[in-house]
Length: 133
Image 1 (cartoon, rainbow, N blue to C red):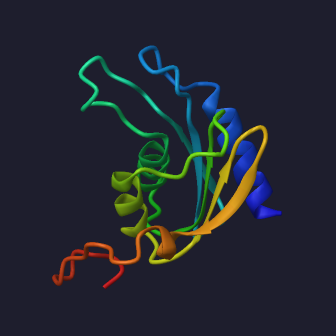
Image 2 (cartoon, rainbow, N blue to C red; image 1 turned 180 degrees about the vertical axis):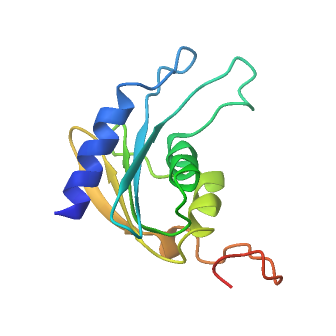
């Protein structure tokens, strides 16, 4: 049930995506440890490098609200098969959870992946700065 709510939130967030260059609209939702859902959408920029992915926008929303642990992720796109998070987003996600279900969905398909499987050898600092130790 929680994953269905995440997918629905990601689908709604996708409608707000700002994608005038690629027309590739993405919505994402993350569930914080509190059970609260945080959403984000991609925001493109003419310089491309300044583009913000939906997953990172959702994580920033979560952190801005005071949470630093996520328990699940959903990403919604219009492509088929559904697109999984990019490498940068995978690294950002594992900063806040070593593993969590990641639902990738589109109007035609949906599958559940494992965050640990998406980034099996994540980068982690040995200092206390990394929340996952």
